[in-house]
Structure formats: C-alpha cells, structure tokens
Length: 118
Length: 199
Image (cartoon, rainbow over all chains, first blue to last red):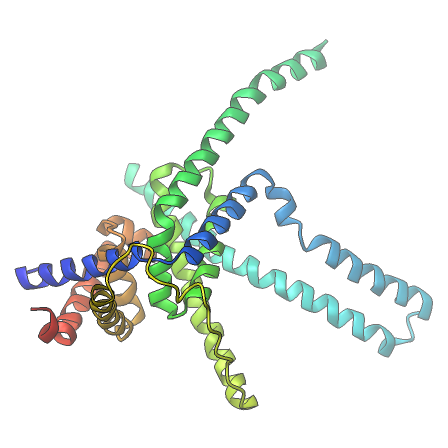
C-alpha cells in the first residue's frame, strides 16, 4: 500500500471511529440488552437448544391423535397437521444447516492446523 | 463405597468448573462490550439499516456465546465477525426474496420515524461538525457499499475493525492471499471513487 492509499485508509478509519463514537443512546441501550441476552445463553444452553421441542412435540401429538381417531384411511384429514409439522422441521433444519456450514469450516481449519503441526 | 468416592470426586471438580464458567462469562461480557459498537456500524454499512444491523449483532452475540464461548479468548474476534458476516450475507439473500415478493404484492415498506434516534448528539458537537462528519461517513459508506461483497468485508474488517490478515482470513473463511487481494482491490476502487474529496 502506497502513501496515498494509507492516508485514504486512515481517513476512512477516522470517519468510521467518529461515527462509532456518535452512536445514539437508543442504539447503545439496545446493544447492552443484546449483550445481556447473549450472556444469559451461556448459563442455559440446553434450554435454548430445545426451544423447538415443545412445538414439535405438540404437532406430533396432534398428528398422532388425529391419526388414531380417524384411522389410517382418512388421508385428507391428517394432511394439515402433517404440513404444520413439516414447517416446524424445515425452520429447524435451516438453522441447523447454517450451523453445519460453520462446523464444516471449523473442522477444515482444525485439520489444516493439525497438518501444519504434524 | 466406590459410588461415594465418585460423588466426592465429582463434587470436588464442580467448584473450579463453576468458577471457570463465571470467569469465562465475565470475559465474554467484556469482549462483547468492546466489540459491539464497531460491529453494529460494520453491520449497518453492510445492510444500510440500523434496526436490522442491531438484530444481526444480537444473533451473532448469541451464536458466539452458545457455540464458541468455550474457545480461547483470542479466537473470539475472528469467529464473531465470521458469524456476523454470514448473518449479513443471509440477510441479503432473504432481502432478495422479500423484494421479489414485495414487488409482486406491490406493497411499500412504511416509513418509521424514530424520535430517539433523531435526538441531538449526546457528544455535544456543533451542527456544523456533525454535518461534516456525517457527510464524510456518508461518502465512505456509499463508496464501500458499491464494492463487491467480499471486498467490502475485507476492507471493513482490516480497516475499521483492525483485524490482521490472518484474523480477517478466519473471519471471511478464505486464504490470507485472498484477503490481501480483496483489500488491495477495495482500496484502489475507493481511491478512484473518493479521490477527489479525500486527497
């Protein structure tokens, strides 16, 4: 990077820092609340991970009840709860897939790290 | 007897683990407090919306604490920005879908006026200074926004957050060589755009 580029980066950083210092009270308050919410996750990880369990369980119970009451021949009646159940599972799958991408990247990093050490 | 010894052993190790957890939580709190304001502005430049940026920062904080809180402190910064940048990218994907639906429905987003956000500057700067700073930052934001996404990420992480090349590579999930290339191209593009105002 030449002198002109360095000066440009410095000026951009100065303007950015001024904009960070000038954040309004409402945003700072929301950041504070966000931080507290995140730290609360550290002491209850299991509960957070299982937050979809009651909804999925309830949908499964409805599905089972309808299936039991109507019998296996009533395919049209059970299709609606089955669709709800699929939605719940899809929502969970999206979040899981997001994490899987990250886990896969981390695994690659660790393998590369082992390779460098070995 | 053996069971009693096991219970004793577990109870003996429980205290230090609890203390370590508390210490880790304090370290996490300190880390998040240090990084949150710059992260908010970086996310805001990425999505051009303060509320959306706040949501993305909160998501990144929660994911970091939940999934990587146990990792070494010096790994948190690149991991946090990795999560945040993934969030920004996902936001753009969702926004693309949403825009297509909105065009289809021909509905416009309502214009919310935030009274608190438009309140006077708490730092007590004069309106002229505020205007000058706002104009400078507006020019940078517009120029940074015009960059390709990967160049944007590289430039903001290196220049605004101050991550080194290795940390930026971890945050972006690419090689150090790619970071250097993205950064160099970003600087050249910014110089072309901002040159006349910034020399």
